[in-house]
Length: 213
Image (cartoon, rainbow, N blue to C red; front, side):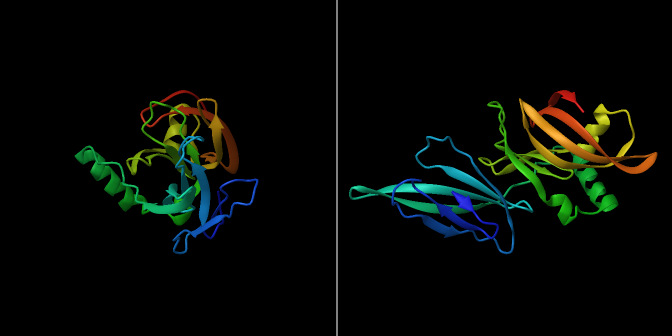
């Protein structure tokens, strides 16, 4: 299956042979497609794909096979996924979230744009994917349609580095062994020059360990 930036989906039932392709259109409403990834196992008879847009809208694309006579007919089902924010677990957390908005304002469109969407590898994790923006790593459960947790990359760097670094942003990220390999851009308080930081972060939505930033 492939998808164009404007949301045109095309599925090939087989790469060899004369089986016709199946085409559908995602209801993007002006969004731009960022990535497509498979959520189910390779041998699943009704595979489900996850399509994400650049500003954080998700679509579940499922291939449904039904028997008509002696032939299987494949149809594409598209569901827009609404991802809920993590619940506020305390009064202090709710006040902190509102104060953060009052002091720093709401995030810009650029800060909400995805750098990458990656699958989680841990079998113990409730999260299906990690959605990475310039400033945050978000652990999302597609099954529960919930944002389980988000980690601010500046706070993470501050916890493991003694230097005073500002304007920390994720430039690129990829899966590495049992964690993430992060390329970060940052500035120091004593210099206005932009620098790069390469770090490894072993993480789950519950904790982080064995980090080398």
